[in-house]
Length: 352
View 1 (cartoon, one colour):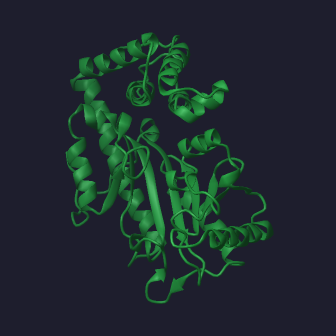
View 2: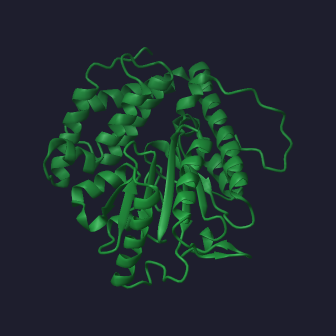
View 3: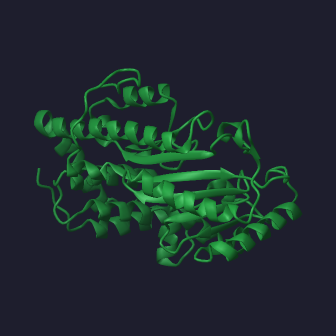
């Protein structure tokens, strides 16, 4: 099954059923901004970055005091891992020494990365496919900061960024999608190919350069120049809604046509999670992905999709060590991860 091209006329689709809501896990809108007359962070000196960090924090003190502002150098390595796994900061910012910083809302709905690839990367987050809310959160913060900071901007090109692919609006709108149903039907590759032909980026759960472990994909716009922010948001939302529809249809077909394939996938995954003695992060994500599918389809007792999403986060290396209050080797983490997950899913049973 392949997504229709944007040129094709398709009839108005009926609204998605409520059960499809969990397929889109979350969305994020990110705005890349730079200060006029300043070198981009990778070309700047340490003193330049420190000065820019001070200027941004001063602007936040004036108009965004609700954000907690912290220099990256002042964050413990384990806490940096937790922030990265929570998708609040990038791997590049984690490794930034002097001059890197962040500011985050208490509820995690907005976050600003300072001196990553660009001087500012303003992010808004929301649940599911609520891209408008994510965009509003990022846009409102951007407007407040622009009252006190002069952005690098060209009348012809728009916002100027370190990477040419972000020039223009500087906006990236992305959705995290759980597409295990399409994978079980062997239809994920045509869908990914169609998305890429429509100039959308398809990445794994860890962002750029990562694989889609657990069949969780990040889909975002590729183009930022020659269109406006509202159109990017509409386009990404429209296309991702169609992907969600195809994933939901794949799940329905599994129930109707291949229930044994679905039952076997769930049974194997639950059995391993309940009995394994060692689990890598990638293995745990694959098996939790199956349980997430089962919970969404009502095939797991005493287990909700939100419970699985929490487990997916808590079994990550940083969160696992933070939760246990200890630094562990990779082998020790694999052992503790298996023990942690077996206890958390011990009560779960299947209805199929």
